[in-house]
Amino acid sequence: MERNGRLLLLSALFLLTGMRDPFRPPDDTCAVGQLAQWRYQGIVSGLGIVQSGNKRWHRVKPGDRLPPGWRVISLDEKALVVEVGEGCDPKRWVWQREGIKKDEGKYSVRTDHTVQTAVGRDAKAGHPRGG
Image (cartoon, rainbow, N blue to C red; front, side):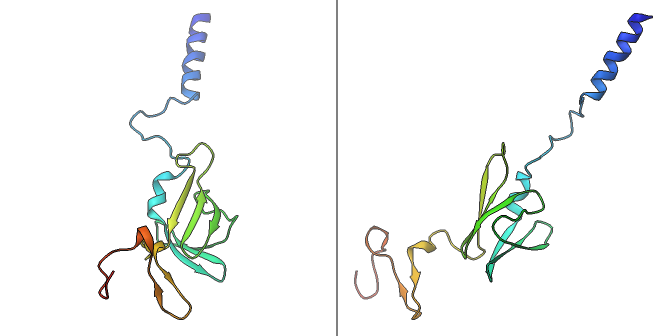
């Protein structure tokens, strides 16, 4: 009788300690799979505008938390940086504003609406007026 009690206790212990379904994907506690679905649209009056994967709009500022639990670290007119969480890979994620190209930093627009092109190593040869 004592042996049956031990067997029952042991089987109950296995059931209670997390025998999970081997066919179910592991839980994504960091919500890393959702990072690529969000879009940073820009900044208005110091608030960043982001759109979630389910097309909901959110206004954020540094220190705010987004619904998956990510914390907004910084934002400016070009990018929004969030901290995904401790033990997550990646630990931080950067969204560039929609419409920003990766090489846009080579050019700067002045207040008189003229464009200053890159000089030196980053300059492209073959300008129409020589160069």
